[in-house]
Length: 244
Image (cartoon, rainbow, N blue to C red; front, side, top):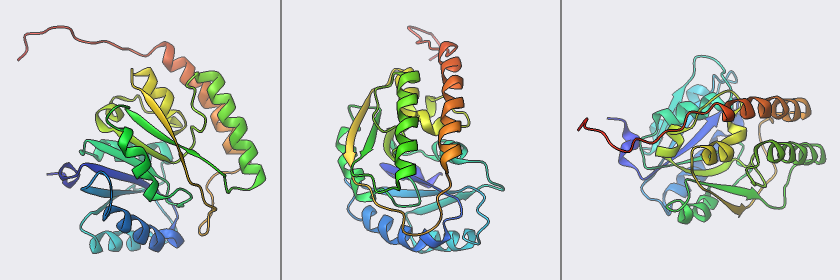
């Protein structure tokens, strides 16, 4: 049996070349599991084909903690693929998402969890952003462009702290770049989205995977893909059947 089925909440943590952050992840996540508002909770690391030598360390980390699990890609596939793999593997009623850089605080999941029964997605809004000027400006431009194209009304789509109902997450049409559109995708499938302010911290270890070009060009292109897909999304509800 998939062990995540024994938990109320699975925290999905995509990891790509974050060897320098693994010890902090172990400490912060294990501390959070001990007091989670959605206990019992577990962690599912998705190693996106890391090449920095951190994969064996991640496997050893998971052997030290009964509530830590991992899956590892044969090669780098990107953040959206890592999220999809985590969603596909998750069998708990709720799933969370947090980035491995720990610029958001695992403890803030407890700010989101109380709303998870009423809303299919609860997403953070990063307050007092601790990023550099270029990253803040590019993120602001990208968020504005997405809101204009998707009309999702979400202030901070890129916040890497989210709680989803797993049943809803499994219904989302997933594609490369979909991590930028989780609120809009949830709304497209009839779900509701709640936004909650969360804390934000500077990166203290490892290297950022995004720069000015891919932070702007990727969302620009992906918005057109989302609009194309939204017009062609198949949405049906069965009223009656005799199959049971």
